[in-house]
Image (cartoon, rainbow, N blue to C red):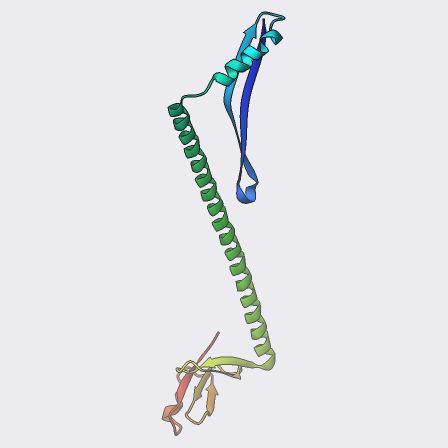
Length: 175
């Protein structure tokens, strides 16, 4: 016996964004014909006629095509979801790295500013309105009056309002 086999394979590629392409191979038709040894070529036209006359029923083809289309759509949705997850993760990583770098820069700037104040012998004080000023770092407490005059000392209990004229406001040291 000899055998004649015919197959129709439909390859399909679909994009998978940053991850390359996906491939789907479908065998849509497979036929095999046999003949006694030495008679296969003589029956070639008959086999071709038979193969050409075979057609799937319309209802089955419609059902099959719809099922395949549903699978392709599901695959596309799955790939889109995966790509969305990957994109969100990449954005999260970028945001995390940017946050770390921003904190490093802020820390470096704060450290440089502190070194600058140390070299200049000053520290920052804030008044109740939120304004800041730099005063000597030799004392831990400072007061200001309405004429922009300052008093500094190391006694946390000192209050110039009982001893000096004017309305004195205590400043808060900023660390």
